[in-house]
Image 1 (cartoon, helix red, strand yellow):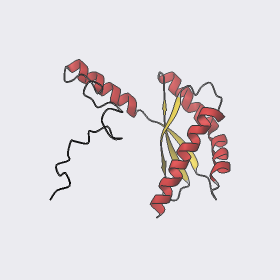
Image 2 (tube, rainbow, N blue to C red):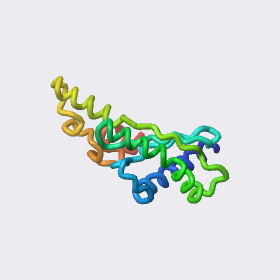
Image 3 (cartoon, rainbow, N blue to C red):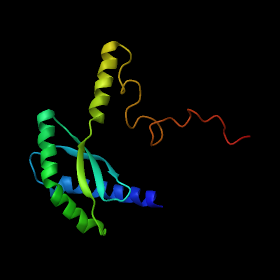
Image 4 (tube, rainbow, N blue to C red):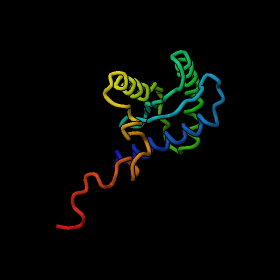
Length: 145
């Protein structure tokens, strides 16, 4: 049950931080910052907040500095919004997953091993269901034996 609560609280922190970054924080150093994930410790006293910042390395460094300096404000705002006994400490971590994916895609294109994720139909939103996969693939049984 504690795992489910931890997941709910993490999702709520994710939502509230996203809202705060879009409307509550007016620091020009932030640029285009997106919360990509929140990982809470078991006791929910610390939250690792993964963020993606669009731009070059200097822009990302400034954005991380802005988040670090605003962490007290963000934590205080979370305390008002979450109604928890203790609001977790926030640690912001730069998430470079998107950059790594783009680099791998570019290297595959340069090596001639494929046309990239978009050309292979692996881009987000391609397919019939929410996961981007066709319903036909992998459905061997059609309600029969």
